[in-house]
Length: 430
Image 1 (cartoon, rainbow, N blue to C red):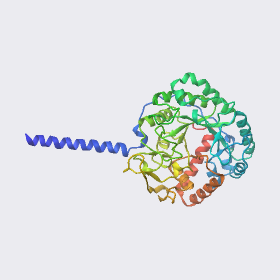
Image 2 (cartoon, one colour):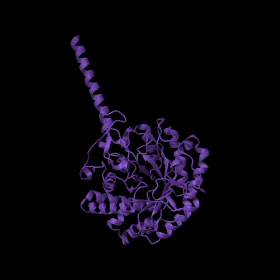
Image 3 (cartoon, rainbow, N blue to C red):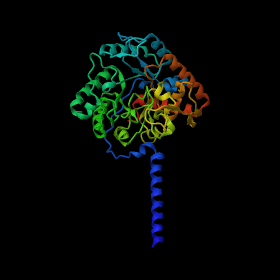
Image 4 (tube, rainbow, N blue to C red):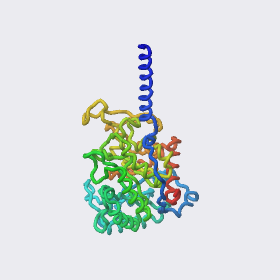
């Protein structure tokens, strides 16, 4: 009798061991997004419109781009207009020389020495976009204009612009707020803006999270559909932000490195919306996911971005803050320390980027290294924060050109992103 009891205990222990190991494999080894396998009924996909330069497709054959020109096509240049809508001289010169693929319209700086900004009025934006169009008329590929346009993140919210509802308002009253969304989309299209960062599908799950966002994933999906459908109907491509979800962030992940415990609730809106609209854009934040990706930010991790090429290959992957502290820092909170304790420096092994990336004495990798990691991870477009300078962008282009001459993987990644951008401009993959 005792032998049978002992045998039963051993069998139970074996079964429990297998169960625990299975859970560990499921959490640590299965693809990131496979942990949120939702079934969503497919709906009509918002048609992708042709973007500036769509008529220049022949130029990719008749006038093949150099490596430097191709790299420039992957960059988003932030432009801060003057109070009269003029293009700052340094920016204008850099635009004429490098001809980047994208321009992000930003708020006006109060002064060149100040980090404070003030809203851009509709009249100023009209002057600026007209001058940008005139300036780029002779470019092989005219730059695509884009901006943030979602509640508190809106860059263009001065006199004359429609007030954009917050994501919380859109979640709580989607039908009531839809007219404002439709009017805002029409305004942007009239300005020549073809891409917009929004909707923001971060789910706020704690009291200390970002304000103005939604706390219910299901309501967030419904409200986001209103945003996507209205901007898509106006011919403006929506870019879902901020993957993999920054609703738990206590501060801006671009400015301050953040390690967050990403859950099903964070990922659910992204997955459901991409199943309905598989040809949108996604803005990836330099968030580090707890116990994942060897401590790399999601924006630099091939594993974190793996679902896009495998399950959502039409999605345009844009990484933000390439030059910012959140992406470049190689300091992370010590796992042995309590919350708010000291930081420890770590080295992160990144085989695809050429071995271990050692941080400088400041604890940061270079802007070019940050960009390289993102491209190798699967980014198509590189976006920068407001502190980037034209000189730094030039250095980045030069360094990536040098590396790509001997790094076949990097060269392939650059060329693949450029081909995807050509499809984006042509309105293909609808």
